[in-house]
Length: 155
Image (cartoon, rainbow, N blue to C red; front, side, top):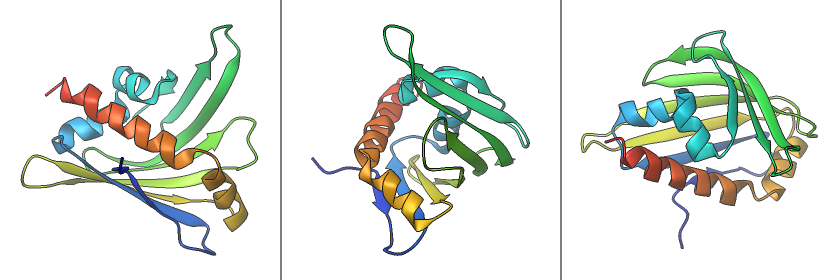
């Protein structure tokens, strides 16, 4: 099955570009990134904090059935323009990747569909390449598929 989420990682660069078109109006796609109840569903993680505004912060955490933390991440919003763009930092707890800078841009198409473009900048080529060795592309595609399914029900 073809993955709808596309990841472009140019050799020797310390960034990547992710694109995905959604069968959703722009407002709903944006809402899926800023409303904790929706984020928790499609990302399959607990939202501990999500201050969707400039200089706001966010924190996510996933635990196993015994309550052990298996994933944690946090960051700060540097730019927040509703239905247009979000610039934020992203840092995973206890991971060797360091802080990354993410530029999310939301684009409306005439047929009530929309597009998300994420430009992610890593500290080094090595950090980016380590991330790409994980099942990153598969996980992101699965999360975006869940986003599409969950938000479709809000239409």
